[in-house]
Image (tube, rainbow, N blue to C red):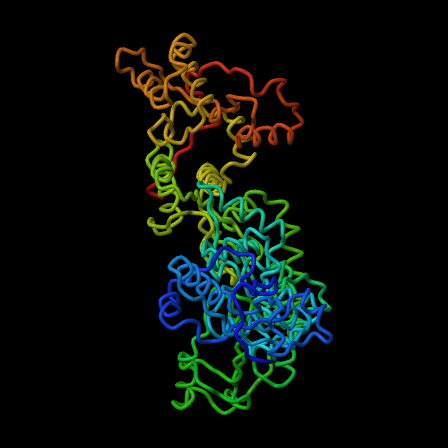
Length: 626
């Protein structure tokens, strides 16, 4: 490397410079000092291709720089500031000074990229996406991860995290570079497939959809439960379970949480057997719904009857605490509440394998007998839906929306308070706290079966009519909004929204389509009024419909009006599609083998003064005093 002063006209920015090809950099911070004292720190340059071809060996001596041209490997911001100062002096007739330069030896583009990045990282940290672009270019030119780590003095993990950005769609990298996605969200998106990344972007673009971020995104990617491979007690490779690598770090996660727990419980059982055969008096498995509180136990060796506690965590981790007894047990021994024979470590009456044998045969007998007792089976199903178990994961519909106005509209509609009154009645009948937000779900899954058994005995005391009403609440809470099931149920029982819903300000504010609004005017006010106001702005059209619904401003009042999208069955106002209820209805019809209507988007009559259908079945009431 040699130092020299080169005329600005012989310099250009190299394509290997990590900041090349981007908009002009902001040099406001260094421009005053360049004006006052010129550029003091030499920039890194090398011969251009043309000059190198004229040079015998690609080298240039200080005295030979007159005819050569150079490209800037590092120092673009200083070069841009110098060019600004040169233009200012040229306009005022001043002298233009050459640029101090360090001419690096001719080499491949990878060496130039490294020089550019080293210089920029040391002086002005580029954003992470820019680092990725440069690192990726170096990898394509043959540099290994170890080479990059040694060159830039960065840990291999940092290099891997940067390179992991290559797993993202270009738009996601652009959003990250612009600060529109945080680092935690990007980390989890690197584990997503391209299809999942596209689905996430669609949620982000939808103003009414919930778009998960941070740790919520991990749960979204893994179906609600992400379990790290490092927590497995079994041979992951031999299990055949699929895993997804966290490209930002060292972790990998199981794609199938249920498959993990099946293998993990088998491994816990094997460990339990090994502990018992090793002479431990007992092994107690603490389920994920509970917690092993060490301060409630005292250390006790194996020879004095100490147990092993297997603390199972919801994350999948299992911690084995060896040699503990409860403090109550530890206090009894010094007081003489047991002789030496009682204090001796004793083997359990049956081995773990024998216990499994007993459990499976009893299970087979009970489920065979249960087929002859449908009333008990019904109550057991309801108890599982309310409390949950290792094999039941029932989640209430969250009715989630990011739009506060929509949330308030749903909460204040007639149907929600009606449902809430019945839900609280069910909570009272089941002896559950009346401030519980839902009947179903049960919070943490009942892995021990204690809550499940208690609830089953309560349900066995209730008559069938009350059980069926409890079922209506549980099913109402767990119906998926926007699904074909909602359409199927609504059609079957003849739901008429005109009796429980009326157009509010939120509804009209969400209509953004002029063609749709004109058809709603024709539907609610008549074709003549719609034609007469065809050129009016949307605000006027909404006011016309509002007046007809309220019967104000001399308009004839329209009773029980419901837009086509919300009726059972639903339909569209245009042939453009994109109506979720119409698509869900088509799925429901297909499920029962009914061909779609010839013209589902055709005109539909206005829903006026439709009588409310009689409820099907007997009208049962909860015995609130039960």
